[in-house]
Image (cartoon, rainbow, N blue to C red; front, top):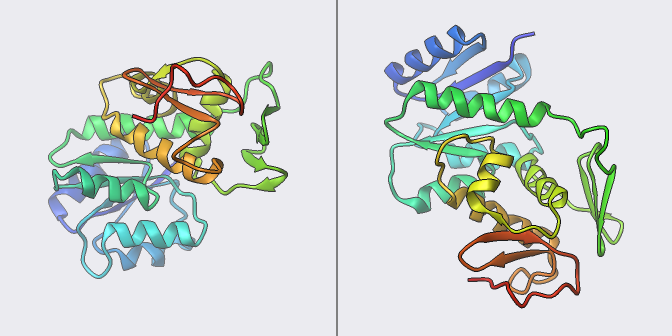
Length: 240
């Protein structure tokens, strides 16, 4: 069955270009030109991924993201923006977007990002992988894609869960931002590592008692991040 992609952009030239390339790649595609129309198509079309422009009539991309996540809809979202300000890009990630691209962009690069998201969401835990990763008060259930702290469920977005699971698989190892981009976002090119920092910040807000003094996800200065259990030495780590 073909994967379904919903394109939300009020520039017909961009929508037509993306629709042509995505259909050529074997996807089923629908296009709408405003944010409100997304919610009219959610049930009848059931998209597997949404390519969402930031600047839209009626309801902008940030509002669409926020409302989808409020409804507990975990459909992957790639945000398109013509704005260069990093705060606008981070705003998209803060409100539930999985990735973003800045216009102008190559349709082939967008296709690569889409394929990477589908590879990650379709991957299953390997046969030799621990079913449950136990780290201090936290349990990460790989197959169920659930996280619990002190037995209580923690709500994570799909990308936050994938990032945490990847850190669990490499517990105690220092991972660079580029390694995390490759392992979690499946980027085989030099990506924007600020995506990693934003998602790490979100994870800390959800799993740490105090995000400013974390006991699980440590920052290793000038290198990257590592997952440690509570009480582990943080002498080589810093929140810088």
